[in-house]
Image (cartoon, rainbow, N blue to C red):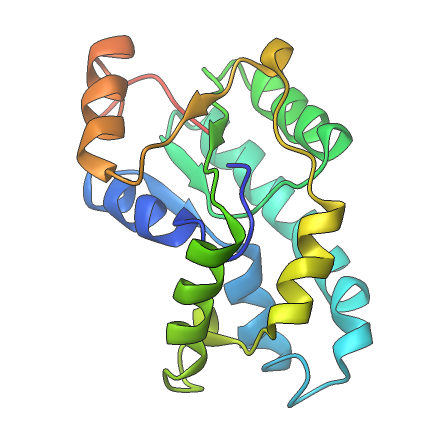
Length: 180
């Protein structure tokens, strides 16, 4: 996936999980191990705490794909280089890798994030983001390029699930092909 906070990554990933995909979410693992950034540990330490989690998720992803599982990685993958690294992981495991781009304009993203900010602290996806955080993240995000062949998500999980079923008929079935 490639998308900023509030773009719908978790909503789509959970819909795919309902279709039999294994959902991997590094942010949730960081939350489980360290709590909320900005509350349980300093905001500036997120990437330091995230790095070993990403390494662990990469190892688990590789093993799941080699085992033939369909997988969705619920993560933003903001840079071309990051996407190339994770795509290579999937391809080395002989997986059919699909990059899903979840575009969103600032106002729509901020509305969703603001709603999440009002949610409970017990939800790892409700970690507090300010509008300035969104602007800062947006300035670092590089949208997928045409040569990355992204599927552009329209905020309708059912449309993507139908596309997957048509494109990869054996996805999310026992012994089927695998997605990332």
